[in-house]
Length: 324
Image (tube, rainbow, N blue to C red; front, top):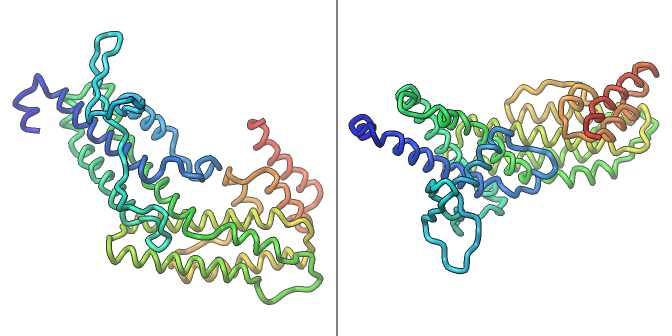
């Protein structure tokens, strides 16, 4: 900052180089901990369009992607048609000491926390200097200070998506007999298995926290993602049911209430009991229209009249129409 004040003719170059360092660090964190995640193609946990645009800009302007026969140097200079010199560096590589596949470390959660929180800290420092930098920064560069807040959630999403065995839940739910003829007083075993998964996740999160402090905000994001994925799994499991009686629908409600009640005790979070078939499903666009329609037929058919059922199905169809 002192150099920028004293040597004002190079102030813009200093800001540009510092912003490139930040851009490279942002790109490295994303490349190491988020890119090529299998859940991205499913439409779950996607990064914001704004952040995606930023990452694409960094890759195009700063990262040397093309392979050459000779070993790449650290800095590659390219000359554009307008004789403008652009500096590019090789794509970053993650240290072999960081193992992203170990479930006992929650898939290197400690390293993810250090990377994302240091990135947030740097962004905060830039923001605190913004009023001063504004006097020396070109207008086209100013937006970079507000680009980076949405990387924490997608990186945490990768951990949450792997931390629990959601596929096992679907298999256990598929094995349940839902066309029963009597009211059950005991919930199904898949609820206990799912809660056991949450308990194990809580234990591993505690183990990581003893080595690297996990900020409360990060912890809350992780729990939010896990609960959201668990709810999605339950909705998908209920939506896949082909035969279900009124007593079976009552059992679904019992299972879900038991799940929420025990999860509240485990997390200390207040979880609202909501209507899974309407407010939850319709507010989460990742659910397929087939799942939503099945839930209407299987879980609401005895609770709403034919006209209301057709109205709800029409609303679901309206949501799906723009995708066709």
